[in-house]
Length: 211
Image 1 (cartoon, one colour):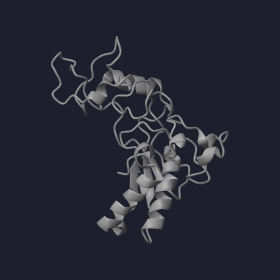
Image 2 (cartoon, one colour; image 1 turned 45 degrees about the horizontal axis):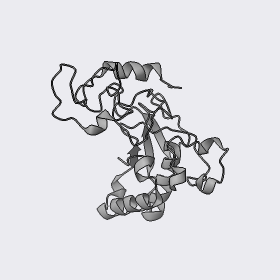
Image 3 (cartoon, one colour; image 1 turned 135 degrees about the horizontal axis):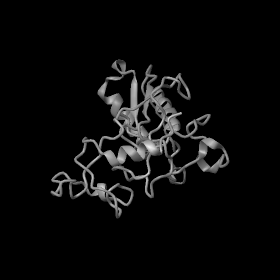
Image 4 (cartoon, rainbow, N blue to C red; image 1 turned 60 degrees about the vertical axis):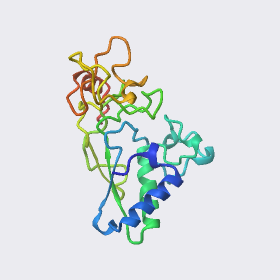
């Protein structure tokens, strides 16, 4: 699991991640990494290089669309496709003979700009199912597949009050964010993490962009 660009996309973070993988001495046993697992980060358009958009170099290019404002924070890999490019290049340069491939979780990243804050991760309101699982990817030499690694409809975490009216002992304050289902008037409470969340799956289906 290689997280996503909002965690490890910065060059300094990626350098540390490469050093961690190298120190484990496991690269000969790995085909590659899964990214955006259970996440909402958009695929976007793949750029010619992972840092193509830095320094406002190509602001009108489709691959430089940046819904989370990462480029202005000096994060070169502002979408999942560019993050895959960055991951491949950094790992292959930092670990001899290691050319990792990537699988991207597209189960819930069909909408690019649904969040007020991209750090919000719990039961995101307005999200949609993304591309159907497929090996037809933007670059087959790097990305093995798009896949629904987290089943769409599985709850990320409970609201403070559960659907049965009891208090959730495992409540995480992030699940009460301004972007989380259950934090706005008229929305139902969310069940425990991993349980089926009917309200969420209906939103994911309504906003789906599977093709």
